[in-house]
Image (cartoon, rainbow, N blue to C red; front, side, top):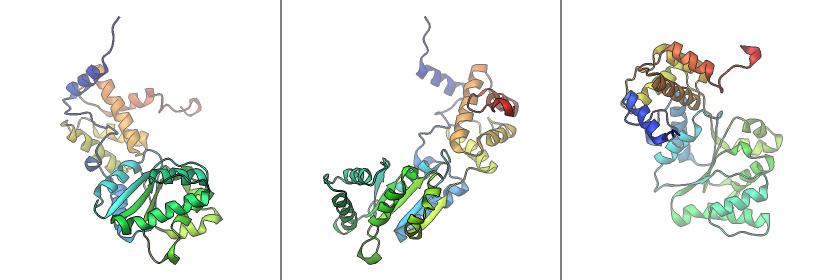
Length: 285
């Protein structure tokens, strides 16, 4: 019985194209990311906002590049001036949210919601004065927050008659959060958001540069994918980096199996046509 060695297959793929490492990986270091025009605008905007403090909002569809851009933002921050608290697990009740937040802050559990709220707020308010770096609470996957929890987030920022911002909150979410934020009960929260950015997918030029960037970093021929191949990848992916990675990786695997050294438009068209995740519904073919 023949067995397949996954590591061996990966080495075969790298050897076939002469890659120094696999391109189009989701595990890229934040410092080594390709940044599109929208990602650069977001990074620059967040760095300017970090000096202002307060509330900020980042939205965008799944796979558009929010997470890696936020990782780069966190990496770029001066560690002596800012302390980032990454809070990505978001329960759907106010009590659950506050319990998780207190746990993330290393605080003891309390029996009442009001005590949990007061404890977390006091800790965030006093942290800068006691420890130096300005706290930045990064709430990722915030599309899961409902109106009551979002109002609790707003109330966390209400203290000392709004005389100063002792800590900052950065909400990162898919676009699904936007209808919730428009709820009348959240008028006050919306008015407190100092900076908001909706991250957009790549345009064609970004897609071309993104593919070339990954190939060059992998010590490969930057023209391994023809212009027509890049254009077809852009059309199928709609400029979403995660989908670009998906199609490009699929093409590299298929090309290795078939012994191809280059990838042209017709080859990409066939890849997309046969890919189960990109096939059009029967009524649309």
